[in-house]
Length: 163
Image 1 (tube, helix red, strand yellow):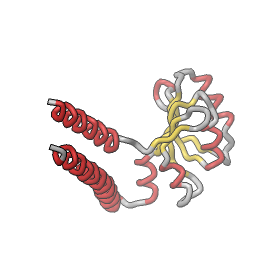
Image 2 (cartoon, helix red, strand yellow; image 1 turned 90 degrees about the vertical axis):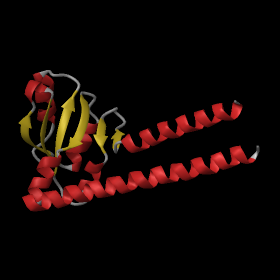
Image 3 (cartoon, helix red, strand yellow; image 1 turned 45 degrees about the horizontal axis):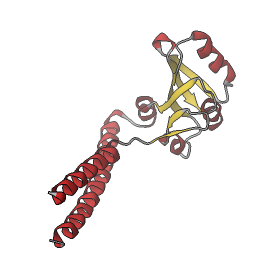
C-alpha cells in the first residue's frame, strides 16, 4: 500500500512537471514588474528597430498619451493605438524598451510577430519560418519529456528493487 502511494505521488509530480515545462513561455519581468518576451532582446542583435505590442494596466487615454509623449522619435515609432486604449504597437529601439520596462503602467511588452515576419520575409518564406519554429519547439519539449521519463524509470527501479 505504501509503495502505491509513493508511486502515485511520483507520477503526479512528474505529470505536473511535464505540464509546467512544456507550457512555460519565454517571458521575463523587469525590476518595475513589467512582463516582456525575452525574444525581444534577441531581435536587437539582428536589427536596431523591433516591432512590439505594448499592453497597459489601465485603459485611460491620458496614460497612453503620456507614455507615447515620454518616448522620443529615436526610441519609438507608433504604428497604431489599440481599441479601448489598452495599449499600442510600433517599432522600438533598445532605449525605448528600457524606458517602457521601467514604467509601472505597462503590463506586457510582446513581439509583434506578424509585422516582424512580414517586414523581413516574403509570404512563401513565412510558412518555412513557421515550420522551423514548430520543429524546434517540438524537439525541445520531447527532449525534456524523454529526460523525465528516464528519471521516472530509474526511480521506479529503485523503489521496486527494495522488494
